[in-house]
Amino acid sequence: MGIEAEAWLTIAGLGLTEGGTRIVEDVSLPLAAQRTVVLGPNGAGKSTLLRLIHGLLHPTAGELHWPRTLSQAMVFQRPVMLRTTALANVIYGLRLKGHAARDSEGLAHAALARVGLEHLATRPARLLSGGEQQRVALARAWALEPELLILDEPTASLDPASSREVERIIGEIAATGARILMTTHNLGQAKRLAEDIVFIDRGRIVEQTAVAQFFTLPQTEAAQRFLQEETP
Image (cartoon, one colour):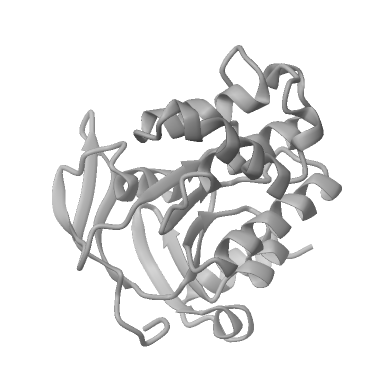
């Protein structure tokens, strides 16, 4: 099931129940691929699963087994921008992680340059376009040199040109050796970025397999139906 390699995370019986509603139920799987994309219908539990893995939510059942602790960063569909400059937003992330003030500004400038936004360093972040704000969020995450980058629908509200730029940046972060775990509604994007696909439906993992197999020969009726409905 999935790509055979040493798992960097093993999930065992993970569940989350809120207000008597089961949002995620009995999720058990290894994550071993460098680039994993989680797919599923709206409301299937994709974002919740990512937040459980990142520690933003606490499970009501099950466990996460990390063979070793990985430094992590997470980027959301709608990034939170502080009421300050693009540069200061990146510096803030570095300072939270304990970087000295004398080092943070140089690291932040370098991160903005990597995402093509050095020329907007002094611009108020909240006045940037949606695509530019997402690139600032990626710069803020990349500056931390995470071993695991978690992305929740990072291009859901972006135009095609901005989406391509975000994909380019994700590819460059992956090229540094960082593991990528993300959700997307864009099947073409999943094909381009994923090695492994995890398919979730109604809070349960239905299928986990290599990307080529998932799109050419899905193993379950739920995955087949999903692909039929989502393919134009």
